[in-house]
Picture 1 (cartoon, rainbow, N blue to C red):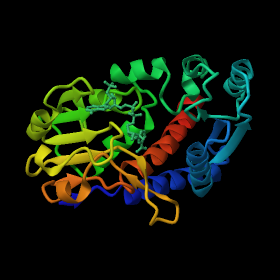
Picture 2 (picture 1 turned 30 degrees about the horizontal axis):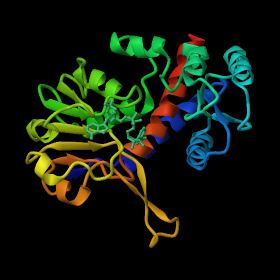
Picture 3 (picture 1 turned 180 degrees about the horizontal axis):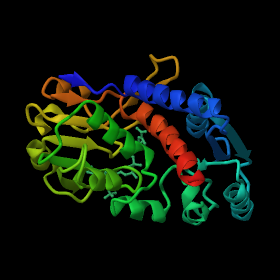
Picture 4 (picture 1 turned 120 degrees about the horizontal axis):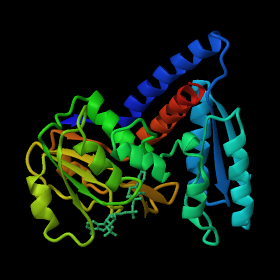
Length: 292
Ligand code: NDP
């Protein structure tokens, strides 16, 4: 069994970007600049945004954190977004989700200039991705593709079952893995909450991508010998024995499934760290594409 080590691979990707950024600076060019907009004070969102900003600093990017109050109106947020769209010193930005309930997420995401949409959530980017054109690919599926490619996991002609069809993980990874090219050319089945006999499907799969958010859902009896297992799930499960009061669990019963797998991602340390690295990669691409 080979562990797909997202912690290590994401560090390598960050080092690669860092080198390119120092070369840029030596040529007298401006470093890539990422901004993050955070509305409210949700604990998990604060942690995520904090680590994105810290990662920018580590690799020599400019970063800006824009914090808005919980009661910020949708109009005020849209005005902020318009300013970011116009800001020529900014290459890309993200609006941290979820937004407070009184704000319409769809209207906000549609207001982001697709050229600065480094999360890849705008329909213009999603459509371009689906049509094999240059696009910002959502960071989590982009990270999974990088892990598969860098570890040379065979995907061509393989049967991949993706469990979950969300717009940010399941749907895009199912499109990417069925496309021509590295980490692609797979025959993809997409499963969801209405799928019948899921275990029958996963048992046939050469590759299983779990993105549903139910801790340890995939058990050893649901996978075939030698399968590749990608675990996207991140759920906080209460645990009084841990100083934080919780532990992070993936969608895979790791120990028993790892015993049968040929490749597997751990949680934490698998897909999670890759997500941040690919956000940085998208920002670097934004810097290149927007100056061309
Ligand atoms: P969503 O809740 O948006 O989607 C979950 C999907 O799972 C839905 O398509 C749902 O089906 C499907 N599903 C739910 N229950 C079942 C079931 N019993 N059998 C089969 N399918 C089921 O989640 P996300 O895609 O946003 O996230 C999934 C997980 O990945 C979460 O744990 C999240 O925290 C994590 N995540 C991790 C990231 C990382 O960086 N590692 C990034 C993003 C997410 P239906 O469509 O029918 O409702």
